[in-house]
Length: 239
Image (cartoon, rainbow, N blue to C red; front, side):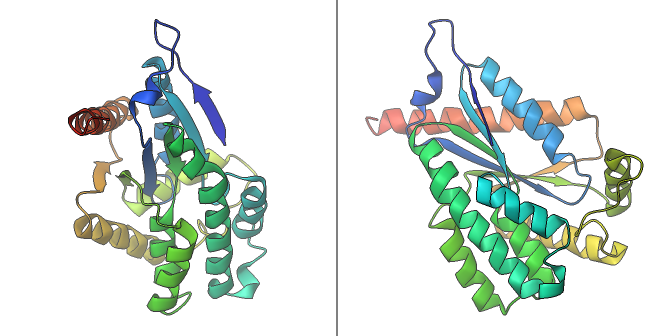
């Protein structure tokens, strides 16, 4: 987790204007550019004088980073998809309680690389557990916390996998999830799109096969618009 604090011309952070903070998650398939766009958005918001926390899943806490190594390295694969789902849930609960909720309560803007929708797509498609059990794990893990905005970076899996391979560099093999079949990646993309259709008030669909600068500008506009609406609601409520 990286905490970045921006100050305005008066020397005061303006995140206090957001009484309940802002929780933005980034989702998408392999090679969709999530990490790049999170970094761009964080830099943009810091220039506005806002307190920004950048984090990721699995990860975000010392325990979560250990779980990340186990999961992405494939060490837990032999245990089965059900155990992987449980490890994700345990790491997420720790992440929410230790990092995300405290940051939001302090008025921060949390930018998270993957959250509950990744489990819905990756472990859901893998039939890790019956849907009612997966939903119960989700409820326990998020502790009532849902993202305010979910940016879905949508990309054709053919292109995404090429990007992911180029990003790894020579000598590095694909991780536990990158190495799945092309059809699995296609199915994941379709599952993400279905979630976006089902929850249009939360999801913002961003085609990821466009110039990086264009995508970054659009994401910044979406987030700033949401922030402005949130501040107006707070003022109307007397906050």
